[in-house]
Image (cartoon, rainbow, N blue to C red; front, side):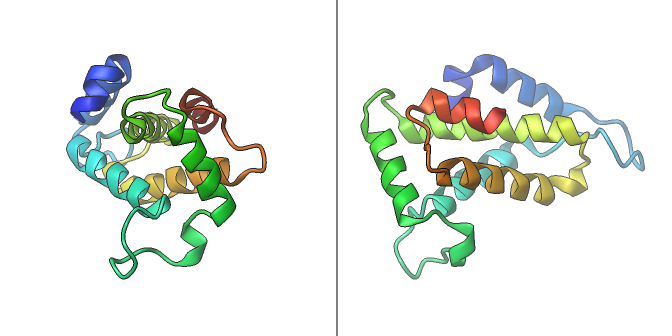
Length: 145
């Protein structure tokens, strides 16, 4: 979250503002979400989707991960050196996507899991396309589209 705040301050502030919203008990919609917990979930989403864990450390099933071709394209994208912290840049993009999806759905706290799964599916779909993103900025634009 520190990287996100320093490198995407407008997105960070928007997320903090949205997360702090509380329309009161029983409203069911439009409430905030646990901002710091969302950051932890985005980290785990990226670690899991990008298969950054060693085998046997609880990776998801095959359908929740990238193909070898997509992983190779992602590795080339991250190796381009356009960002000193490619994972941090991807974190910022995915967190912004989570915020956009949350707002689009006008989600409640209880819909956090569904929003997170939707963001994950969107990320995997973008990374799995034959015309893979050519930069982190391209990735960000595509997952926010």
